Amino acid sequence: HCTALFQLNNLNYHMKDFAAIDFETANQHRSSVCSVGIVIVKNDIIVDRFYRLIKPSPNFYCRWATECHGITFNDTVNSPLFPDVWAEIAPRIADLPLIAHNKSFDEPCLKKCHEVYDIPYPNYTYYCTLQASRRYLPNMENHQLHTVSAHVGYILDNHHHALADAEACAEIALKLQML
Image (cartoon, rainbow, N blue to C red; front, side):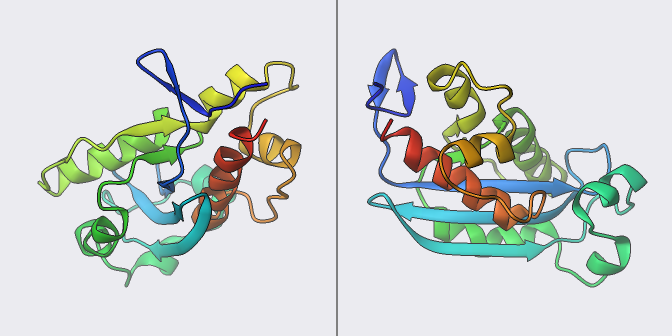
């Protein structure tokens, strides 16, 4: 049995406090974040949830993106820009490490948005439940978010909604620590 979720410098690391994060994008550009979901975990308990629609940059939607998450141009045309939304998020996450399911997607989204809007990027520490599930649950048929969340006992009802996905990620992180 594993007793920790992530490895840091080849040592197992049990994380009690973190922020699970998920982005949805409007098109192929990582800066085109159109929604964000954040779930704050303190002392192994979910204590806060945050969701916002965001006016993407560049501001256009590809059909495949809308088919995936259901968000359209009309949904975000009057939404705040990323800097305004991030101003609400940054104090919530403070010095918490971030966790995403597939950080190779979410981390570049965050970095690109900071770059596009010329916001200093504070080098957030990022962990990945996709990588952790591959390590700790190697015999699964796949390691997609909905598959892993179901395996750990969390049913993801609204996949590709940023808050639902962030909550599934948080639950996976919490459950993998107990395996």
